[in-house]
Length: 263
Length: 263
DNA sequence: CGAGTAATTGAGTAAGGTCAATTCTTGTGG
DNA sequence: CCACAAGAATTGACCTTACTCAATTACTCG
Image (cartoon, rainbow over all chains, first blue to last red; front, side, top):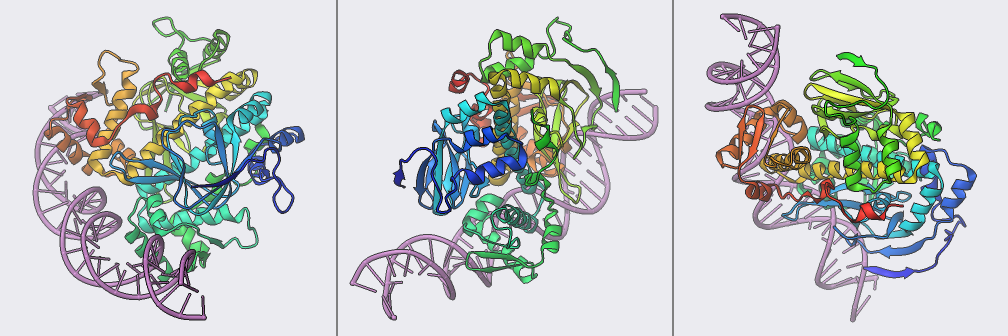
């Protein structure tokens, strides 16, 4: 459930004194160039903080939202659902990711968002985001591009599901998560806290939790990864990436042409 | 290969006298409201026509493009690829669909586009599209929204792949195609020309062509669909949709809230 | 008419699912 | 600090769906 939504508006400082929006802005800047003024406009967006417990849908399927959700801490899954009720996770959002920026242009959701672990969110009203986009074509473009990258990742997952077996899929996901978590913890690029259960992994990979377990088992036995509690450590990255057929460009986590093209 | 690209620029008339961009504009207007002036701006975008033969990649993986491709006739598939070379189709574009509007903001492609049947394309330069978006926030928003709908469809396909068996997936795809083709041929909502082979269907559904064949076979035997040549006819739509768990809202083919919200 | 592609069909195999039981963890209250 | 309950991970036995390999039968288009 919602735990005491903190209704403070305006810039919210982290313990470190930076805005909670800073990591998100950093993410945007990785992919798009923005002037100082534009950056300020984004950092000054009004924000409402909220805590969400594990396994809570904080955005429900078919609901109409008036705000977008930035993940500050925890993990969020974007769910799709079969009429029979089977759920499939179609995207994973980590701290610094805006889980549903696209809801700005499609406020009637086509998906559900669920906290896969205890999560802290920053909610930003659609109208503020819309206005920012209207005032600055560069911001509009950055938002659009962000959505395209999001879609690009979904497409990769789709390829995995369609054409890779369980072991390859698992390896691919671990490589992706390592790369994404490394953004925030560059010192330990080969380990991260996997905040999700094997059941949830199954919902991501299109497998059963039993098979996920066996798959992790073989990766472990092969000396590719290690688990200690939630902590995942990649032992043999080369081999893991080879199995996965992983190459990180689709994550668009480094500056490239596109960032300079924007107008 | 490319067959004599017709280098005419400016408004290209169809036999009927309408611009080739008209169907695309119509698609946009389904989802976003645009002023008459904005509509004209879009219709006046410069266009280069091109013919592509079957099984030709006209956009290659990792290439940098400077134009977006509108499908005028035929079918286009968006491909993802495993390092081993297995291909998976992640999206299907029918006449009236812009296959890679997203390339405007991400010109280095992360995908390949292939003609799945003989196809006519209208290529529109990125800079013209960019300028249109910069000049009008409503157009920028419409483009963004279009991309979000595209992603929404991919997400559905992903759910299918992860959580539906072969029969359900096949049924779901046929329902989707019927709905999308019905836009252009409203008189025959229950039939359409399936311009793709069973091998290609397999690449869409994450199956082998053998299994696709058997799956179609059972749908046929169950009296749900009929094939005569390329022509597919849905006999029992209710039952087919029930098997698929299909509900068309994710295609965003009818006017709804979103269209009125835009600024 | 014949080549080449696409669709079918059969037989045997394997990856992953199902069902069910057992063992860890972890958080909680006393 | 300990006992317990609830959720997570693990493991075994067996089953089903979809894959592989291979051969045969349509189609389609010069």
